[in-house]
Image 1: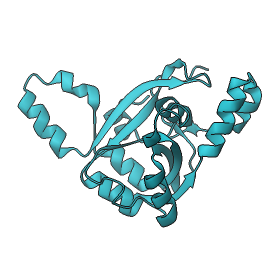
Image 2 (image 1 turned 90 degrees about the horizontal axis):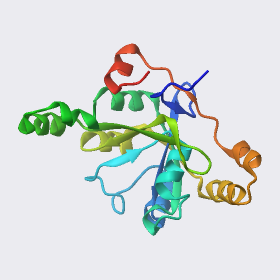
Image 3 (image 1 turned 180 degrees about the vertical axis):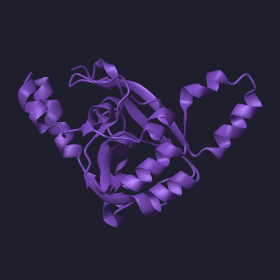
Amino acid sequence: MPTPNKQIRAVYDDKTIRVYQAYSDAIADTALAHGTFKSPPFKMERMTWIKPSFLWMMYRSGWGRKDSGQNRILALDISREGFEWALNNSLLSHQAKEFKDKEAWLKIKKATPVRIQWDPERDLDLCPLEHRAIQIGITNEAVNLYVNQWVKKVTDVTDIAIEIKALVDNNQYSQAKSLLPIELPYLLSQETANKIGAE
């Protein structure tokens, strides 16, 4: 059975869902020490993107090798309540095209603290797949909620990313696949699915 084109897949349990971010040593070390992000060095005023897909994070960060600002891969277990609040207080990035009145769009955008993008999911070679992975951009009040309420656990998964990449480089795909997190479909209410364009 083919994977739905727009479906959230993640590591989760009844209380939390895992998302990934890549940061510098300074931000990662502080987050690990405190169990959440601290400002400084984390910038509360910037939009921050969270991703439930491990391989999409590997694509975005180049397995943690793209640059020094993304050399540490963090897995963040956040509350499902917070995650679903983000989805329900979001706008799809591509909705901008639907607005002829740019001022009206900017007003709605400013009042909505979360952006949703659906980008092609990636395989172990980081090549695009037919189905898509969700990216969730949080800003303003959503960043405060994320840092101060939603984050329940921070784990550094940089070493496992490096290990999987080494196996891929040696064409040991079955071993690499066995180390990937098991991401299962995340069930949504019909209302939430409709809002974010999920199937």
